[in-house]
Length: 223
Image 1 (cartoon, one colour):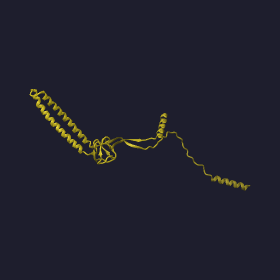
Image 2 (cartoon, helix red, strand yellow; image 1 turned 120 degrees about the horizontal axis):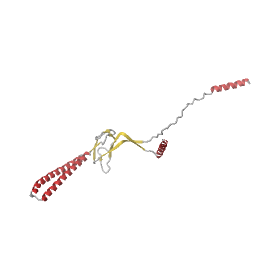
Image 3 (cartoon, helix red, strand yellow; image 1 turned 180 degrees about the vertical axis):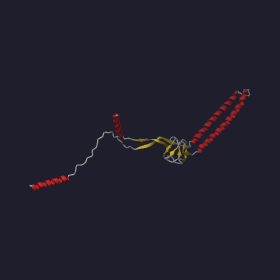
């Protein structure tokens, strides 16, 4: 009996020695705070102002004078369109203006000659009225021809397409040799963007929009 008790006590002592120690559990302090919810969306970044570049006259593109994706300054030359037709138009309108000035000078001379003769009744009043009308018409013709010259010069200037503002220019949509400026929908040659500030456009699914709207509504209610 004594031997059996000794064996049992010895076995119990061995089991107690082999038992692992109790694990050490970390203590965490629970804190209540607002956790912002975030979600990733695919978007596209635009300049704060994006100005499309279009040709204002028709013609073949002769030159591209910038580096795509580079910075441009206001007034910097971007594209050139064939100027020959517009230079010819300026020359034609200048010729018409010269003719108008010649006719004006003749009518003025006639009026100055007839007016004193009419005052002494050496010529009829109808002759004076006709000379005055011819002079007025010649003067109006000079004004119209001068306006046509100015318009032709403006259109010639449109052959030199310049940057409308400071910014970053994108990828050109036109190549040298292409015919540009065709009405009624001229092709956008490029875009100049100001990027001191930017705009980001992205799209939400209906479920994401409803979730965000609910969260915003809860926050507004709590505030």
